Amino acid sequence: MSNCAIVGINWGDEGKGRMVDLFTESYDVVVRYQGGGNAGHTVINDKGKFALHLLPSGIFRDGVVNILGNGVALDLESLWKEIEDITGKGVSITSDNLKISDRASLLFPWHKDLDELEELRLKDKKYGSTKQGIAPFYSDKYQKKTILAGELFYPEALKEHLKDITEWKNLTLTKVYGAKPYTEKDIYDWLETYAEKIKPFICDTGEFLKAASASGKKILFEAQLGSLRDLDYGIHPYTTSSNTTAAYAPIGSGFPGAKIDNVVGVVKAYSTCVGEGPFVSEMFGDEADKLREAGLEYGAKTGRPRRVGAMDIVATSYGIEVQAATEIALTKLDVLSYMKKIPVCTSYIVGEKEVTRFPFPALLNKAKPVIKYLDGWECDITGVRKWEDLPKAARDYVLFLEDSLSCKIKYISVGPERESIIVK
Ligand code: GDP
Image (tube, rainbow, N blue to C red):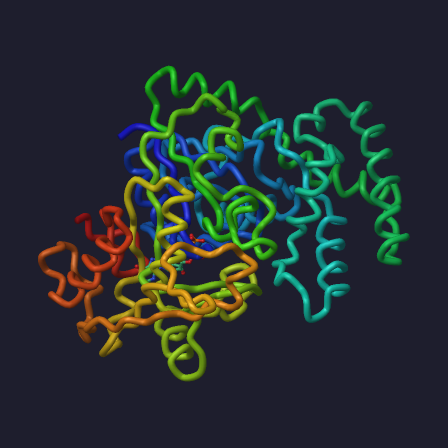
C-alpha cells in the first residue's frame, strides 16, 4: 500500500480522524484536501484527547508532515486558535510538521456573517449550517472573489485586491441582508493580526508533495464529512459546499497527478446525521435516545445532538460506490453492545416499489426504510483485539454488512482510543 485516502461513507462523524491517527504509523505525509474548520475529528492517543477542526489528524505523530491543501477553506483566526489549543496541550507544531498551501483561499469573518444571515432568512427551511462560513466561502471561490494565502507575501497588491473584494462583499451585506458593512481598515487589521502568525507555515505544498512522492514517501489524504454530503454526489441541497470524495484528493491537495492506491471508507456501525435533510433510517423517541447516549452522539464542533438511526445498507452502498472505496473501516461496533436485536435498513420503499439503489435526492423524503433485525451480542467488546475473540453474533453482524455492502471490512474499532482496533 502506498498512497491512501481515508474518507467518510455516510453523513460524516464516522471516525475518520481516529483512523487517520492510527494509519499515520505507516505514512510520511497527511493532507487535508477539502472543507474547513467545521469538521470535528476527535482523536484519543498517547498524547491525550483532542478535537481537531482544520488541522490534519497526523499532527500528533512525530516525523509526519501535515498539509492543508489548496482545496480547504483557510480561516486564519480559527486555525491560529486551534494551533494554540493543540500546542498548549504539549503537541509541537512548527513549519516542519505543518505546511499550508499558498493556493488555499482565505475565509473571512464576512463568510461567517453571511452564513448566519442566510440561515436566519431561511427560517424553518434552513440547511442546518454549522455557521462557519463554508457555503459563502466556496461560492466566493467559484466566483474568483477570494484572496489566496500566498498573496500575504505581496502586501501592496494584497491591499488593492482586498479593497476591491471588500467593496463587492459590502454590496451583498448591506443591500441583500441589510447588515453592517466592513471598513477596509477593519478587515485589513484582522488580516494582519492573523497573517503574521500563519505566514511561516505557507509555502508551495504542491512542490513539496511532488518531491515527497518522487523520493518514495507515502501520502495519506484525509477527508472531512462523507459521501452523502459531497457537493456533487450528496443529498442536494443538504450537502456541504466542497467535494468530500476521494477523487477530489489529488486536486484539493495540490498534487493533481497523485495516484491513490487504496481508499479506506469509514463507516459507523449505525447511522448518524447532523443537521437537516432526509435521513431514511432515522430512529425516534426512546430508541433514539438510548443509541445517542450509548454512542455519545453530540457534535464535536457545535455540541448539537446528532440524529441517529439504523445502519443503512442502501445509503452506505451508494457512499462506497461514490468513494470507490477499496476497503471499509467499521467504527463504534462497541456502541451496539447494549442491543438485544440490532436493526439494519436493507432497502427502501419508494411509492409502490422496493429499491436497493439510493434514490435521487428529491425522492428521499418519500422513502420508507425496510428493517431487518439481527441478533445482538449483549456483552462488552471494548477489550477485544482479535477478530476470532469477538462474540459470534458480533462477527455475524460484521459479516452480514460485508456481504450486503460487497466491500471488505478490514478494520473494526471497538473504542475511541488509538489501540481499540481489530484488523480482520
Ligand atoms: P470524524 O469527524 O469522522 O473524525 O468523526 P468524529 O470525531 O466527529 O466522531 C467520531 C466519534 O466517535 C469521536 O468522538 C470518537 O472519539 C468516537 N469513536 C471513534 N471510534 C470509536 C469506537 O470504535 N468506539 C467508540 N465508542 N467511540 C469511537
